[in-house]
Figure 1 (cartoon, rainbow, N blue to C red):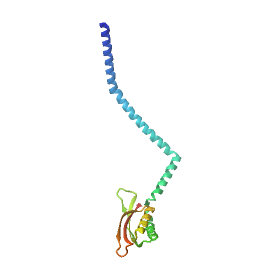
Figure 2: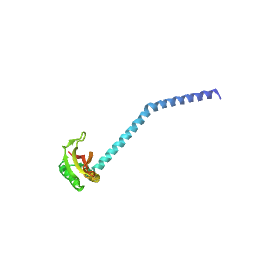
Figure 3: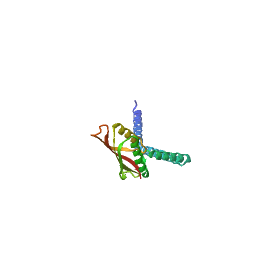
Figure 4: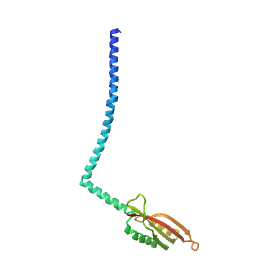
Length: 182
């Protein structure tokens, strides 16, 4: 190869290498951070669009009606788990009726004061103490009826003491809990 061509090719290669390094430096310092900023702005724009669409949808009358219906359904479903304070007397009456239906002997029921539940602003707890004499099948039937009761009655503890006089009947003591709306 002629020295003039060699010198020309070397000069062009050095210029191209210098330009490549300069463009690489420009890309790393200027273009790459801009690309990251663009990605962040795109994400923020997508979030804002979603908020805007949900606000527009919430402003529609049809959506308001749907939300109101859902709230009523949730409130009705909460009545399956939470009793009103005024309905506690009816609840003790219901439990007494369940005991009569299951033919429990020596049935007694006592309620305690409503207790606050830590961390709950709208629900409290009421404890009910029940004692009776019954056979195992009667006890199981009564327990099953309590489990199916609405509002839900929770069995916290129970003790069964075998009677020495009557082998077929045992003394049962139960602690029940019920959620109460404040």
